[in-house]
Image (cartoon, rainbow, N blue to C red):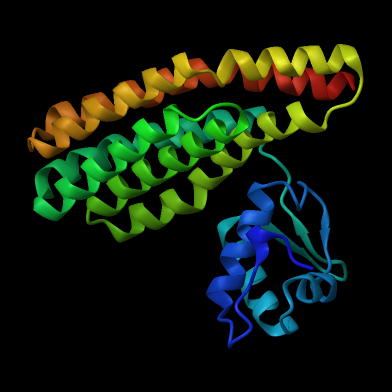
Length: 255
C-alpha cells in the first residue's frame, strides 16, 4: 500500500510524475544519501513499470541527486561536503545577484503577481509549527529563488540554479531529519541544539524580511538595489547556516 505522499494515478503515468515522486522521496529522506536505488523495488513501490523509473533516475542524475556507477547501478548522491557547501554559496554569489538585477530590468505585471503570491506563502509558512515549518520555509525559499532565476530571462542561469540549489535544500532538511532519526542521548542533545540554532522562527522571519526587500527592489525596477539586496541576503544566509552545518559535520565524524 502506498503512503499518501506516494499515491500515483493508475492511468498512464508519465515519467514526470515519477521524477517528482522520487525527488520527493530523496528530500524526505525515504531514500537516504548514498543509498543504493533498486529500480525493480522502486517500480513495485510506485506501482509502475521500470521504464518511467529509469527515465526519472536519469533526470535526477543530471540534477546531481542520483549517481550511476558502472556495474553497480544507481545510488542516491552523498550530501555535499563542507567545502562543496562553501563553493555552492560562492557560486550563488556570482549568479543570483545578477539574476535579481536582470529580473528587475525585465519585471512586468505577471512577475509582480508571482512575487507577491510567493511572499504570501511565506507568511503562511512562518505560522506553521515544528518540523513542518522547516519543510514549508525550505520549499518557499526554493520557489522564491527559482522564480527570480527564471525571471532573469537567462535560461542557462535558471538551469544552473535548479541543478545546484536543490543540494542546499537537501542539506537543510538533513539537519531536520537527523533530529528525528538520531540515537544516543549526547548526540541527540547536540543535533537538537543545532536544529534550534538554525531552524527557528526568528531566523525564518529574518530570511523572509530579506526576501521582501529583494522583491520590493525587483518590483520597482531598481536593478542596482535588487542586485545588492540579493548579495547581502546570500551572505547573511551563509552566516546563519554555516555554523550549524559545520558543527553537524563534526558531530557526524564523532558518531
